[in-house]
Image (tube, rainbow, N blue to C red):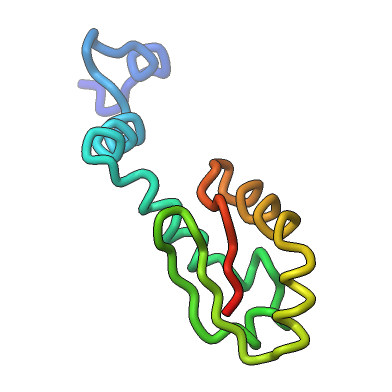
Length: 107
């Protein structure tokens, strides 16, 4: 009696089956949750993407209609980031792999 499967047997799939990853992606698309998931992912990765000094001065992050609102505690940092809004949007979208952010508003 054999308790393991050969690689060839594992590689063969029955018609109509799909991986768990494909199923989850399909479910997210069907319920239109993919965009929200990308937004939550960006908020969670804010420190990793923008760096620790900016994350320490960030008080609040939230999305509304593909706009990212960022409340900062430092006026000079707010001015500096306002000057480079397009670069910040590009950086965030590149990090997520999708066009999640259309505009950034610094408060």
